[in-house]
Image 1 (cartoon, rainbow, N blue to C red):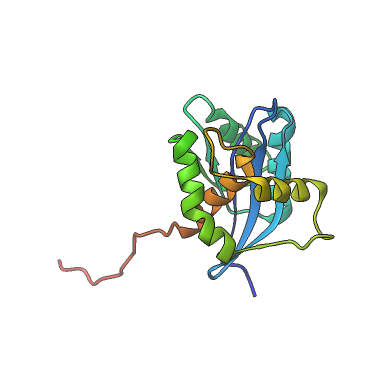
Image 2: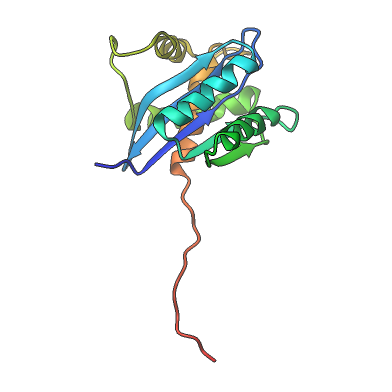
Length: 178
């Protein structure tokens, strides 16, 4: 069966211990299969091409990149690289970035959906990056002042939000009244 949607949710980072976390999500109905991930603490000059390559490999149709007004360039640069290769993607750069307790609250709120709707690769079928992503996910905790290892969990919470988004507009054909 053909998937309903193939999309990515990108939690960008600039390196230095913070990770870019970008799951490649393939949605079938209510289920979301996490086919691959970009997960790296390298500089953006390395991670942005990784995201671009994942888009090409999986034929991703939509990407949501989270950031601030200052970090929106991360997604803009990915969009430019894709366009330079002739690839058109529905790109959403969200500049209302969640931080601190807002991010933890979002992750906590989306945790049941992550557990119930998301399907992950089995051990033995994961790349090194996918395994690190899962290890980060399993070690995440919402307790304490500063959440550690939140990049993987945050990207999955973003993916759930993105999967739940439905276009509310509808087109109807009607007979002219004049």
